[in-house]
Length: 622
Image (tube, rainbow, N blue to C red; front, side, top):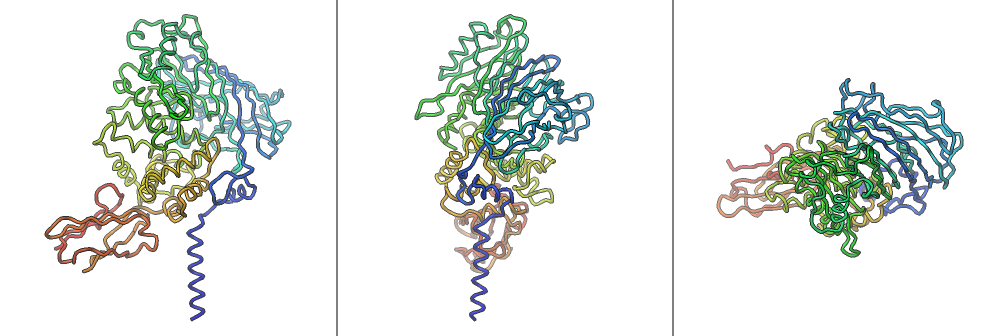
């Protein structure tokens, strides 16, 4: 008997331990050992560090040919304890280079020669081609003198590339001189405590990973082209005619949308000063990237919204759009409302930047303080796209998510954040139900992968979108239901407070939410994020006293049962998602009626809780 008790205690201890601890990668454990991260609290460690850079750029864009040339002076700050003997720079525009096998195909007629690096020097030493090698979408630099810990390096780079019309994956040349220009400059890759240099190639699906940098950028174009960019315009009087510079200044102080450029202005022309070329000067601080857009025929609306009621701090919000884009006449207002909603309600963290521009081109893409959005057919779609892309402000631009590895840590949140606000725009649109439907397109198939699977290894769009957008959205949605909205808000606010301006990993996220919730949620993280589970609950048996349910898919989802009696009012029984923690097979629920009194029983059959096979979710008395 004693041996049996000891054996049971051992088994119980092992089960309890398994629930308390998640699988951790070796590099995370090493980071904890070095005190860069904390093992359980979800806080940065006492020795945490992050590198950064200052970029000063001069850009010349020929809008009709698409030729871009630039020079940049970079000050790189090595805040790490490591001596850097080499460097890695990203050359995103090599995505269109001939011979690159990318996630999206570029037709042969639109392929290019990629980025042409005319020269690159480090600390005044010009690097030879042998010491500055392009491999796919990265530039690998061998340094003559290493960069010591807690020191700086100075780089100078001159480059050019051709943005062909029609090359518009995320950014690009939309024709007739209209451009949204991102991923355009040689950018120092992230060096972090988890992997060292980020050597990931940009192949189209996996997106950002960036340090927090300062930008001072001059963009030169021919007259008549207006430029919108990350940050704040420093010289409006040097590029805009006085009437439009004054309207811009007025919009930056107005609590109502101001027409800075309207259709009559576009028809009359002469919006910019009439020098042959004009240089637009933008600056941005503590931003993870920089983008700019330009067009000669766009309308322009703007206004100022309060994003921090406690300090009165405001942000300038504007929309640049085609006159034919009917929905865009409301976009500046919608974007401003998004900033206020996110700042004061959920997540309830004041918008951290001084500006936000929504630029109208056939895309849906985010950059710091800039989004590139298509025209949408209805208000729900316009609102959803605008709120989604602006939601990326927090993830990955305020928190430096490694989206190349963990896209669900930002796309999942950008999908989740708009859901609360749809009722203000289209109360008839079932936002949550639509996400359930998208998840069910792939759920339970061989193609579904665990959320924790590295994003850079997912090269099919359907797989990537399920594991980065749809399933994480559902995980956050059901977790919020489980802990309650107030606790959930506390969790996300604390997580953002502790990790903004840093690079959290999934383990930091899980541990932070556990700590802030005041409970160990590892049973949930493991089930939803680490395991290959899907949503499928079935009625195993209906007994005289109750119903037996089996979780055949393994995913912890809530249970909602509607019992319709042969006479009387239907009865609803609900069980939380932790109903499954003690076992997936034949969980029993007592019913208030005898079997012979029941006409039908339905389980999870209303499109709110996903289930891949509904045929076994219904019992009807024969």
